[in-house]
Image 1: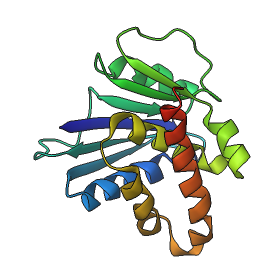
Image 2 (image 1 turned 90 degrees about the vertical axis):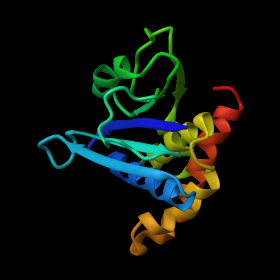
Image 3 (image 1 turned 180 degrees about the vertical axis):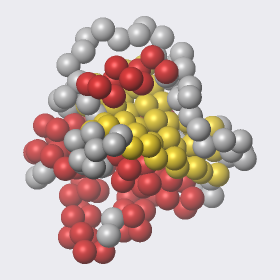
Image 4 (image 1 turned 30 degrees about the horizontal axis):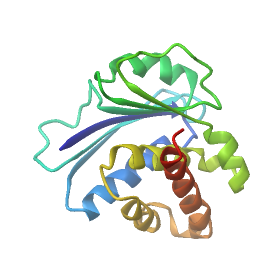
Length: 181
């Protein structure tokens, strides 16, 4: 199976980090993977998105124009990407920042209050991990445990004290999906 995923938000929300993390987890599982970043002109606060492909087969192109799944962390990303998700696909949205109730009827929408959940865990900086945990649980592209094992490979060693918080955020996102969010 091939999962073509777009992850999008403001610069500084950790979009590239979760894209890289999912890519590493895919590699650990022996999948074919690609990661293609795209930045707005600003360093922080501008737009950022990345395309991740996780597949059992060779990947023809890293460019994703019709994602099977999408994580949107903010309103502008919702506007830009929600229409691109293929019918039957998944949209994981950070309902803390995306205040929209008009969704397409042909896709599955998971409204994840990522900022609130992250704040309860200890820092809004792990809102990205909450959404990634939800995505991984919902589409089963890789086991959540592979994502968690990949944290130490992706997060710089000087920040390894934050690994438990990131793991908790991933697990909480997955548990929200299991609970039927």
